[in-house]
Length: 257
Ligand SMILES: NC(=O)c1ccc[n+]([C@@H]2O[C@H](COP(=O)([O-])OP(=O)(O)OC[C@H]3O[C@@H](n4cnc5c(N)ncnc54)[C@H](O)[C@@H]3O)[C@@H](O)[C@H]2O)c1
Image 1 (cartoon, rainbow, N blue to C red):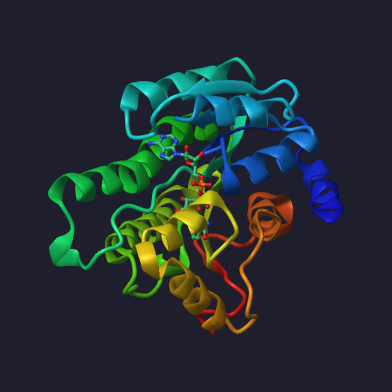
Image 2: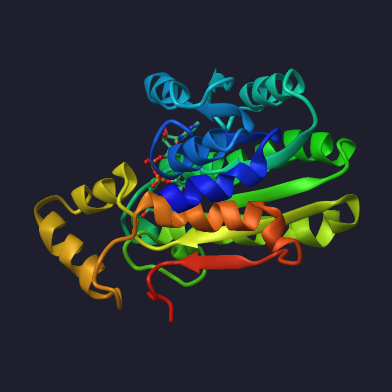
């Protein structure tokens, strides 16, 4: 953790938006950036979680809202205008959705999954990229998943939504590099957050078995920590990654090796 906080000092004075900042990976990134002096707008639909994060992010602005709603995302983007030129965006808000085979997914659940994971990422880009471009450029890191790089039998709908996030991110790099934007994607494997626990719980009586399966198929034989993902996000956001653009970086202990 200490090493990440030192790295985050590279972000002193920079302004950005972190979605999904009320829990897990988004919270970890928000805390690390704020500890290094970044001034942040923190967005999440969970107002209590957001407030908890904000207590350790001095000077941050919280926006309780739904990333899939354009009006909510516009509020978050307008809050950025009060902080100064925008150069950072991290999209960590996401949901797991139904963990059933594709024919069994309910239409409403599919729509909600794509509204949050795909439309929510797009809305953040839609409202933040113009501000970054006006500021002379910046860096974007989206949170996809290892399940966005290969098919997944446990949560295939989620896998499809994260595949869309990967190519949306690469397309930002393809479209906006000349305007000073770098965009990269972090693709975590199983990381110890509430979402991972939800993945196991969704197996009902098979929860313990699913946990063992996820753990043992990973070459490292363990789950990752939010700080291990945070380190990759900070690296890709920062100037040390100045020639890295359009990548989808697995942070998964070698699961996809
Ligand atoms: N934990 C893992 O194993 C793992 C693995 C791969 C990818 N990811 C991805 O990383 C990101 C962060 O996941 P996490 O593990 O921290 O999960 P988490 O559930 O701990 O945190 C997700 C956060 O997103 C927020 N959120 C969900 N829907 C929202 C909406 N519509 N509007 C605003 N906020 C919303 C939640 O309130 C929560 O605070 C997600 O995109 C997830 O898909 C996680």
